[in-house]
Length: 283
Image (cartoon, rainbow, N blue to C red; front, side):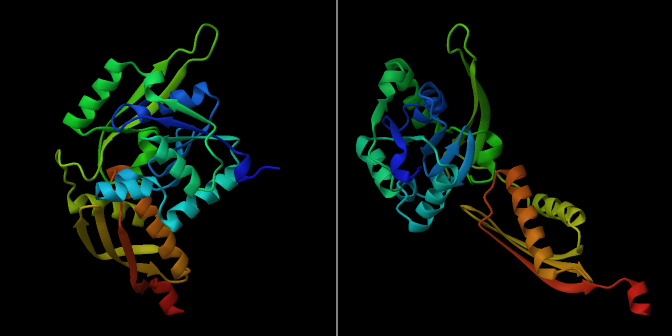
């Protein structure tokens, strides 16, 4: 019978900025591992299943705490997902043996059975190149597609790339997409999205969501970790107001995060009135 203790745990270890995440999917594939834990995320074959990216944290200290799953709430979310998917094996990424052992312990996983080190996979020249890029350009790679990380990351998405590697004659090639990002605590620069962009996205979703008649006032407050949005709406008579507002909020949040790559820290939807068609009033 499956249990957390039945999982075979691997670790992929190397100092920060040496290219672990860049090579994570390849290493996992070579060891027949479908599940990865990296920087607070639980990933299955390039898809984020659960967790919150540690690179979303506003400071380096908070990044370390999130990566180690020190928060009971964040740990519970990932443990629940592990129990749901029942993996036979998991690979944990970390900067040291102590870090990966601590992550395994915090998540209630068995002791690590095999540690793979970055210098077994990459040459010294490749490691030094990765370190140079991290230090001079502030770039970091998360082993998931750009679309997946957009809904969870508040930093600056630089560009996606695809990696193609051959496994040998007669074997299928290994192809994966990565997302190159800058953490939110990087001071390499920033970008700005006008408030009107958010309003246009929300107006479009109001048109698409049944039960929303029109938008009223809207207020967007920008924080370092992402925007907070307040929206007033007029709902149509006869709809379930709570379900309609909940549906509208979920769709707006998802669409904004997908299109802008910005994390929505808070969103309030307030029903300020009900629209009653004239024919209903006449009756």
